[in-house]
Amino acid sequence: MIGIFGGTFDPVHYGHLRSALEVKEIFGLTEVRLIPSAQPPHRDQPAATATMRLHMLELAIKNQPGLIIDTRELNRHGASYMVDTLMSLRQEFPIEPLLLFIGGDAFNQLKTWHQWRHLFDYAHIVVMTRPGFELQNPDDFFKVRQAGKITQLAHNAAGKLYFQQVTQLDISATAIRNMIAEQKNPGFLLPDTVIAYIRQNKLYQGH
Ligand code: ATP
Image (cartoon, rainbow, N blue to C red; front, side, top):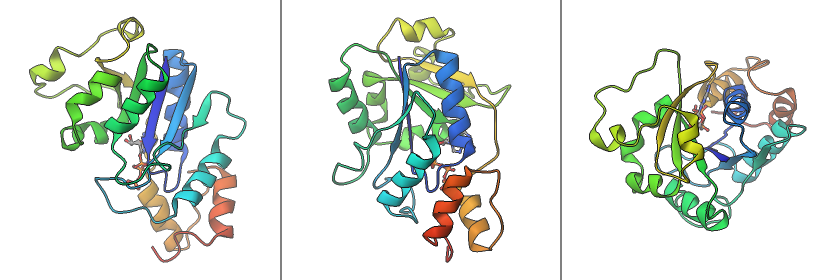
């Protein structure tokens, strides 16, 4: 099974990295692909350039076997729609179960994603939740897809919805950018190598 973790990574932080590592181990994934988006469709454009966000990711996952960077969204023109990304991954991996990991916040917005129902044609969706999370008023579309066991994901290439608790680190890239703009120290929220890169390149100072 292959994990897919999309994001702006502006900058990448321990919230992303810890959950990527945890789900890799919990689901026994061969790899987790971190996929930085070029032009996120749902939000303000990133503060750092695509190249810089990519460099920060590279620094962050050095020496972490099984976490890899996938640049297909950066190499594509136009908006970064996840459905296009999954379609292209499916062409590359015709039979392997693909697991798209999203946070609870992203799941609450899922129905605003471009062709969101078709995401399930290409991958399973795994929502990384807080302890005690329950799906509120699930509609039939979600109910019929919800899986109770990881083996159900392993036995199908796509189409299931699964909720997995992961360690919650209350870290956001927005908070980190604001901290840097206010000349506060973001230490211990993201790797030191990434902090050094941000300093060298004077990123996020006028945010
Ligand atoms: P921003 O503050 O700029 O919106 P972010 O920190 O939320 O950024 P993104 O790159 O937008 O990071 O997030 C990519 C993915 O990572 C999303 O699925 C999001 O839910 C998830 N994510 C973000 N922060 C955390 C965290 N602290 N723990 C686990 N997952 C996270």
